[in-house]
Length: 448
Image (cartoon, rainbow, N blue to C red):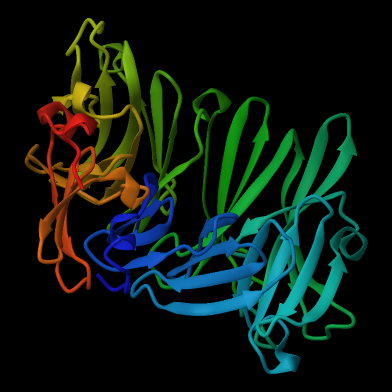
């Protein structure tokens, strides 16, 4: 455990809110931490927090008016800067003239771009609509990089929307240079869509595993979602792939997983999952059997890959009134190509857990986290699984504490056991599949 907490705060990660996979690792956000599963744990300081998952192996979040950037591999603090209010942030060498790293922030309400030095001083504020002549700016998450050698510093990618009237729009990729901070300029622009119904957002990431970032842009037209993938290097906008799906499939925020260093994106509605290989342009529409999802407290699906097979895993927390597998926690694993069921896995009984779950995938392993700390790791190659635990009690007061004497204590929360001494030289965690309150450890037996 890399965070030097006291005996009390080591036990106070807070409940699990989210989990995501990135480059072979799983990361968990709790009320008070960001942590790498089986690795480092870092505090999220403060309570007024806006969090972002960023590219280039970085994790961004805002607490109050301070931007923190952590290294996802090591957990180290890369940057800490005082910034103004914005919706999206990025750190880079955007204005080379000041000799410092800079923070840029996009306000999506006003379409202003703000530039601060890493030291916190104001550098510039730019009215993007006036500068570009566009009617709206759609964000490209993670912004940009050094794409043009003839301009000093990093460039910023923007998606420009032009209103044609009658509910139709054009969209362009634009490249903004801050080489001359007093006269920022659009140095390149490329039309990516014309006469469409909706212009969405973009994402800048290494999509095909070649070590260079690509950009994908989302738009809608005539009840279809379109996603186009482009290289952006020295002004050459090469389209790598393009795919489309009915808007009826777009029932969730896109789920992004990494399989063999390739980005796989999926989204789902109540009956189908749509899975796309963003590099090749291949895609699959997979039916979700009704008996998997009927009468559930919670269900969700994620893609995965094992035994040279692309798979879909549907996790379901079944109600006692369910016709199929009543009261059970189930993982149904399906071959995406054939639609055949590969594994039908019973993880346990839902009665012992809350109804709040988070799923993510790393290649051939699906992780299912309960917000109170227990999590399942499902091996897609074998259909086997393990149950483990992350300490999550939101405060030391969430434990029933027993003084064992000589400065040693033991505490019980819903699923966890904690033993420690007051100078924090000894601290141990354990977990139980069954809530400890059901084993006779209740407030009536609580002693201090």
